Image 1 (cartoon, helix red, strand yellow):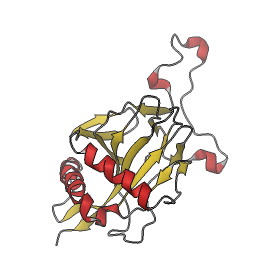
Image 2 (cartoon, one colour):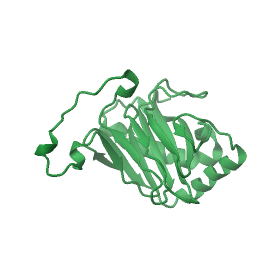
Image 3 (tube, helix red, strand yellow):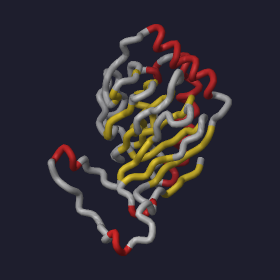
Image 4 (cartoon, helix red, strand yellow):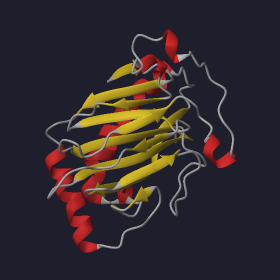
Length: 216
């Protein structure tokens, strides 16, 4: 798993191409079995219940994610008496025009919470048709729009710029995901999914949160 600085924070990334097909099938089946789902950050689209990590058919994915989290544990130099454990996990499907609003995953609501707070969050990309929306990460960890405030940030007059679209000057970073990518990041990072612009297809992902608990 690579640890990638994205100017504002850190992202851990790996790819599990072979496993995506089975889990894509599982999320599509969730839609068939429970077409109502739930509504959290999704504007349109579909989210499953957030207890998939307790289901037998997702056991292999839970093992993959928790195994990958060992590297993060080491890089954060955490004590050996604690480990990362999945708190909750859910599926997402977005069709044309759907997106996910700006949000964080700290202290997520869950009926089956193992630990009290999420530390690391992640996304497993199962199906990504072209123009189906990108995951964007914000430079700031406070949602200033909820406070009717403007964030304090560097502003260079446009007259001084040769390239207005320089990524280093943007307040957000949009990750160029590939199918099979497993992405992890700190749970307090504000992020979103841009609107999907596809016809007769859909974007499918699995999201999850990891908390810390004592080794038994």
